[in-house]
Amino acid sequence: MRYGIFADIHSNLEALDAVLAALSGENIDEYLCIGDIVGYGADPLSCIDKVRLVTQNIVAGNHEFACADLFALSNLNEVAAQGVIWTKKVLSTKELEFFKNLLLVFENKDLVMVHGSLDDPQDFYYLYQPHDSRETFKLLKKNICFIGHTHRPKIFVKRDIIVSLLSGYKTEINPEYKYIVNIGSVGQPRDGDMRAAYCIYDTNKQDVEIKRVSYDIEKAQRKIIEAGLPRFLAERLAVGR
Figure 1 (cartoon, rainbow, N blue to C red):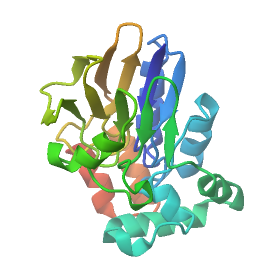
Figure 2: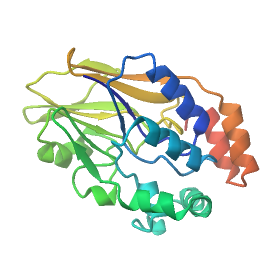
Figure 3: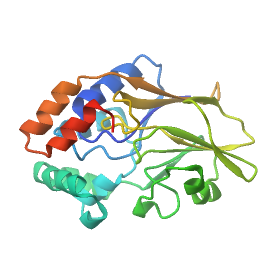
Figure 4: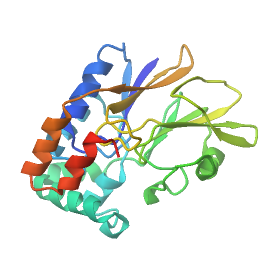
């Protein structure tokens, strides 16, 4: 099985189109989305529609739950809250009901995925460093868990009781270890690389790779500014921060 996994699109249609085009050449058997389809960007409706066309395996991000009034705006920073307020005005009852019915955690025979962490997933904790991931590793019953939320691709590995950060963005999966793979962000990377991120998990080869693809950043920026969203949300796309 080859999984194509993506997260944190944030209403960036240009980035989503580039990722889906790249994945179309990867012989993907199943697509997975780790939430935050909306927020920040100018194309929430198109992004929701395109994601739902390729997969029903979608978990809730904090922006979906914030739009659906299931996560308080006070938990978000000022520009994120502005993005949610703008997005809610664009969405219909149909999209909001879709958000309300999203699961927080997805699990199948091969993997687990959650937007933030397995401990209290409704609180959307951030796993920035290896020590942040200890509770999720304790709760992880499968070999591997895929996450998003920080917009920074990273691979954590637990060997016995030692949790560490792997170097690089590709690794073979050792069945004796456990892994948490943050796949980065499609629509708003924050690791200094402005290209859209996505992930391939091949269960036959037992390997994971986080990949990047360029997209039309200027077009996405122009749409954000024309929509009246905070200019900062457009400017940060060009620096990946």
